[in-house]
Structures are given as C-alpha cells and as structure tokens.
Length: 415
Image 1 (cartoon, one colour):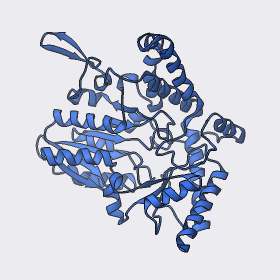
Image 2 (image 1 turned 180 degrees about the vertical axis):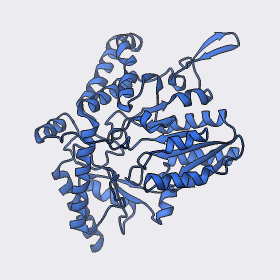
Image 3 (image 1 turned 30 degrees about the vertical axis):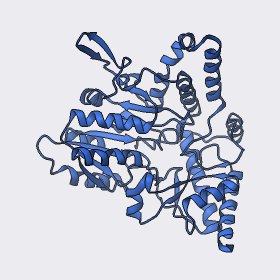
Image 4 (image 1 turned 90 degrees about the vertical axis):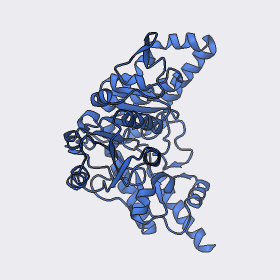
C-alpha cells in the first residue's frame, strides 16, 4: 500500500463540513482555489497567535517565552505526529526553500563528489540551488521524468545509477506532488534503490502534507521539507525540515550554526546537537510556532485520510464542471491525481487570468517558468492555470469558479 494513499475512512458529514467552515474566519469571502499557495487557516491558529501577542504585550518577550515554554517544546511533537516520525527529526526554519537549501549545502559539504538526480518537476527554488551548485562547484546534474508508475520511475532511476564513478554519491531529489502537476509521484521502492548505492533521498512534500496521508519513515526519504501555509492551513513564515537518521549521520554541520545548534564546549571546540535542531536558528517567532502546533493538532483531529477522500471527490466535481462548461480537461489523470489541478488555459497570459478571476471573486494560481521551467519545457507550455481546492470547498464555490472562467472567455472573445 502506498505511503501516500492508504485506505480511506468515513466521509465528512454535511454538518461537520459546515462546522469546519464556520471555524475558518476567511471562508466565504470569496471562492478560494489557491489552497496550494496559501490556505485559509482555522480560528485556532489565530487564537494561538493572539495568546502569544497578549502575553508578549503584558510581560515582554522573555517572560512570555518562559510562560509558553512547555507548549513551545511540544511544537515538534505535533509536527512529528503529522509526519509519523519522532520529534528529534524535526527542525523549524523560516521557509521550506531555506530548509531544502541548507540541507543540500550540508550534503555537498559532506560529500564533494555528488551526482544530483532531479526530475523535470523539481520546484523552482530547489532547481535554482541545483543550478547554482552546477555553476559554482561543477555539480553533476541529471534530470529524469518522474511521472508514471513506480516501475517506470525505478527504471529511469536505474539508468542514472548504473555508471556511478567509484566514491561518487547519488543525491536524488523528488517532489511528492509537483507544484505544476497534480499527480503524486510513485515513491514505492525509490528509497531502497538509493540506499543500495549509499545515496541520499530528498523529498519536497510541499503539496502533500495536509492534503494526503504521508508517513515519512515508510517512504524512506532522508530529507523532507514542507511549508505549513499550504495544505496544512498553517502560518506563513515557517518551513519544516525533516532529517532522518541517515541524514543526521551523513550531513555536515550547517554553515549557519549558532548557539541554538551546538554547545561551545571548550575554547576551540564545539559539540553539535545530535538531532535536527542543529539546523535551526536560536532566534524565532514564538507566535508562529504556537500557530504551527495549533494547525498540526487541528489536522490530526480532522484526520488527513478523510481530507484526502473529500479532496478526490472535489477534484472530480471540478473536472466535470469545467468540462461541461468549457470543454477543459485537467492535465493530470489517473488514480494518483490529487486536489492540485492544472489546466493549459488558452489565450490569456497568467497575469490576465488571475486578475480577471480575482475581479470575479475567485482566487487561483498560475505556474510559470520561474517555478517549473523544466516541466513546462517538457510539456511545451508557457504556464498552467492551477486550481487547488481543499476539503472546505463547497458546491457554490465550484459553481462560481465555472461561471467566472466562462465570463473571462466571453470577455476575451468580445475584445
């Protein structure tokens, strides 16, 4: 059974969905189809932020931090439960791109002879880090097609692993769900293949955590990153970094090591933490961390398996609506299609689509070359219109989306 798609439990009831929407202050202000860019947080997140700000206002930062010492320590517990791992593997940084880049830099420092294997679906920030290392350090970089089933991916991976030079370390970087294509990557057997060559496996789970069940240790990746602001419905300004035992053993110390990540044990000696916290900065926003805990606990109470089931239903409804109204079909098909839907939207530029939809009370996203150049080049597309509903989405929003897109096309035809 896939670590991304286990068996679905009971569906949400109508009353439960109404309650979940009532618990979301921004829901209903517009039709939001950009949960994959920044979702709509639940009220408990704002309660956590407000509690911190009130304590800081009353006592100052230091006393407020002392007051919230236990909840702040428990943040990693909640994040670890979401990923089905242990708290020692969790580091909290300022964004997911930063988390990926510091882990990648630590891998390069520890293993100078790396062959990086990425996919055409690599996220823009990660791609730029790979290209910078190629330009500045001569990194060997190879790209593969990661779409299709597990057997196809493993075959393509084997083709890149069979001619490794002696002492060369493979580093594989994949996306659990790509930013510009909503089919989840078939990850079965990938970690075993990389470990057989003593390599490292990086996984960008930005579009998986919060919309699909994900057990990081079952997947077997060494490094995983995601931002809470997307499908987790968490705060903006944080990134989660997971480091498995192999990563903790095999990555060098981060360049930005500070007093929170190591002990100054002697005049010319230090003792780094033995867990993922050595990658953190000692300066952080406690309110954001408490909000992260609130969003993780909310997800755990809601049950991500139920969310995944609901999202598959929403995807089907949207696909049917847009096909009936516009004749459009999503670019991704098959059993591993997620709630991230992409369309080769005709005629208008991405900026024009977003502005016209926004004017009609609809939020959406457009993915252009800055975020997915390799994938778009392979598809011969300038960009894709991305729709990311979430379990809160109702039929009224879907109807509004269809009407807005129809209206945009009519306006274009009349101009």
